[in-house]
Every structure is written in C-alpha cells, then in structure tokens.
Image (cartoon, rainbow, N blue to C red; front, top):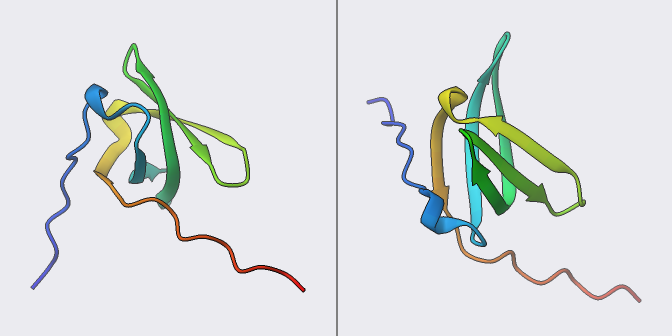
Length: 76
C-alpha cells in the first residue's frame, strides 16, 4: 500500500518547523526547517545549517508541521 502525500501546512504556520517534499527535475528534494515566510506562492524555509530554501508552492507534493528538533549532544 502506497503512502498518500498531502500538504498540510498553511500561511498560518509561518514560524513553525516543517518538513517538505517538492518536485525537482529528475525526482524529489526534501527540506526540514523553520518556515520563515510564504509570500506570492513562494515558501522560504530556513534549514538548521542556516541555508534558506525557496520553494514554489506548485512544486510541493508533501508538507507538514513537525516537532522542534531534539537538542544536539554535548561535545566533550
């Protein structure tokens, strides 16, 4: 049985941590991070490494709000 992909984020989720899957040439790309903005059909997601990913709304095949990232382990 195949999983059903849904987009369950909205503009009201700006500021929340989300996971996304979008269509790109040759397949799909995933991005997890903070939804910084959603304007004019473009989502801007800030990943943990600080990069900003811009996703055209029509390319989304799945997206949802996810819990905050777990704390990183302390280095000795």
